Image (cartoon, rainbow, N blue to C red; front, side, top):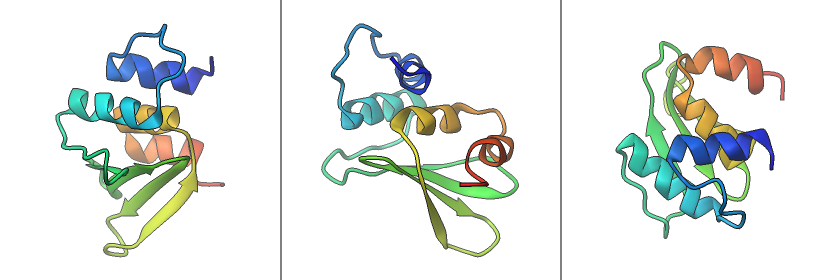
Length: 106
């Protein structure tokens, strides 16, 4: 099992033994853990974040992470990434540091 998948399951409080969890179920568990609304029918999880540079991050299955920067208004940028990477991003103490380390050069 990939480390990002393990991080997503640990972060969401989901049992590590469930091998066939869908991205939607992991996103739902993560949203519940973070106390934000998630509608599986819409399929996208959006989180406002506390950051000096980033206003919102999101995940859209199957593997797209969306980042909205404070500079530039409501323009969003999409990056390839798994639900596990999104969970790690959502729980990172510094969203900017995480973004620079994992997404900036993609």
